[in-house]
Image 1 (cartoon, rainbow, N blue to C red):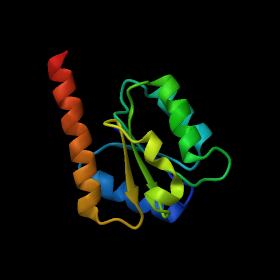
Image 2 (tube, one colour):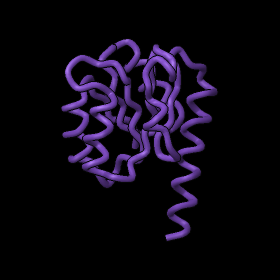
Image 3 (cartoon, rainbow, N blue to C red):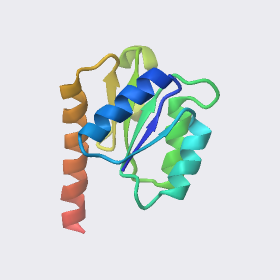
Length: 127
């Protein structure tokens, strides 16, 4: 399951539809606080969070930090209309956290998610 967090309803709706077309179950929310609550409620189901970095209230970065307290190994795809350099997100990036600059092509999203799911699969085989 993917937890999608974006305050822009149009973007959130379009991304949710695309994720569903890819065969993924999607939980949607418009803010970080609610996203953290949804993660608590579905901690055993959520495999990836797609989080807009620029949101009112709790930012995407703050949202991810709170999510990592709930589920330390959560994978996240951070998205923003600002570039990676403009957001300063480089220090957050890892095998578990990736970044896509909006607008992005469907193929870019598919590639990022595929790499995350593949890494999760490899890790679960090791365990």
